[in-house]
Length: 369
Image (cartoon, rainbow, N blue to C red; front, side):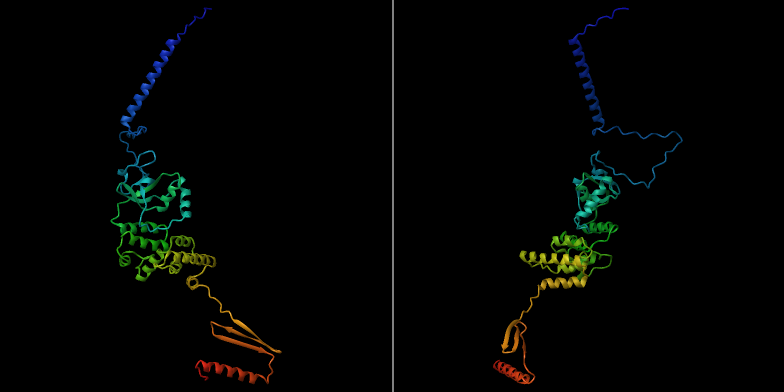
């Protein structure tokens, strides 16, 4: 057996070789990275090329009925150039503005939470919006937008439409989309009319009558518009307290409560009326009152509690004859009772009483008839 030759290790030389290899590898990595960034600035993987079909074989196109996937995602930077009409685009929340004239004006926490719970599984229905001044303006989808903001979701899928002609056109389109899902509530409609005036979408109540349909279709009347606008002027706290109940969210109930408030009230008067209104709302919910009962309840609250006309009692005691004189001051009424009289005494007592009253009235200038 041959002896194993001894190997002498040169530590200095080995260290130099290791450093040289490491340096070369680093240079190669940076060179490769630089080459990638020149061709792919975003650092994404190389797109997979579409295979060319063999000669004489046509590839079957994708079915036209398949839903179009959003053209942007969290991985790809948002691009306004991708926001073409009829495209569904994944838009970052910070680039979205809500609709100022939306037919939905009241958003409850319960509705928002309900949608928020479903978003982790995906957005079932895209919102609708349009491009304006470098941002996405929503037409509908206000609840979905608010739900996305309270979750980890940083975007909303939006179907792009052409920009509306004006704010009234925007309101009509939003109302059309909203009513495909649910009827417009009385308070939402009241607030919408108020908003259309405030935003300058219409110039007057007369224009509201001419250009906005009533709920369920048909023409609005001047009186109905006035009632809706009065509902819209109620304090917001009351509005939110009323929308959650079937009994208090009707137009009749809303208007009855709205009549408790006047534009000329000072702050103290409004606070006092709010307290009364909350009492009415709670009683309507508890007793499930109808329209006539609500109107009566509001009237009784405004009139205040009726104070009872308490009588003043003067006891009478003449030996065995006991009784009292009961006087109702506000009513101007006197009740006399006296017990223990005999039947023979009654005519004389009547004569005495009538004579005393005649003398009293004569002093007042009132003659006996």
